[in-house]
Length: 136
Image 1 (tube, one colour):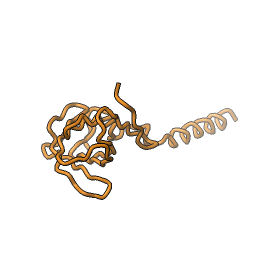
Image 2 (image 1 turned 90 degrees about the vertical axis):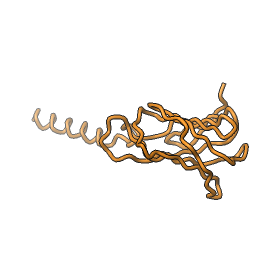
Image 3 (image 1 turned 180 degrees about the vertical axis):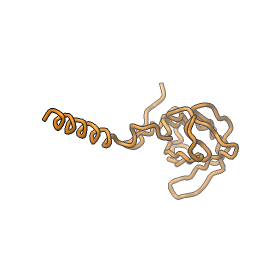
Image 4 (image 1 turned 180 degrees about the horizontal axis):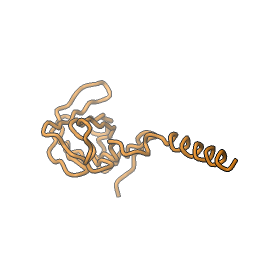
């Protein structure tokens, strides 16, 4: 009888672990995006990453128009983009390709997020969407 109770308890624990949401695992994601002005955008990733030699970024407005973007700096967990032609106080979508979690053997992938071209406004990317906060 004790072994049946133990097996039932173990099964319940294992089933509970199987229901942990995907966002709890290490996944490639953007933490925040900050517009610095004059076409300069800082992107902070949630974890340390490796960059492919072919990493690149694309920026699009809400109408789908693309703007030329240059990855001007890449670090362990962030990068800086330079983009020409952005309008002030508008919302844009950025996609960065050629990145993967540090230590991962998976193929290089992409991450994306939203930001506004308002200087000092941080776009925090979360599982419940984007939350904007003024940088102090």
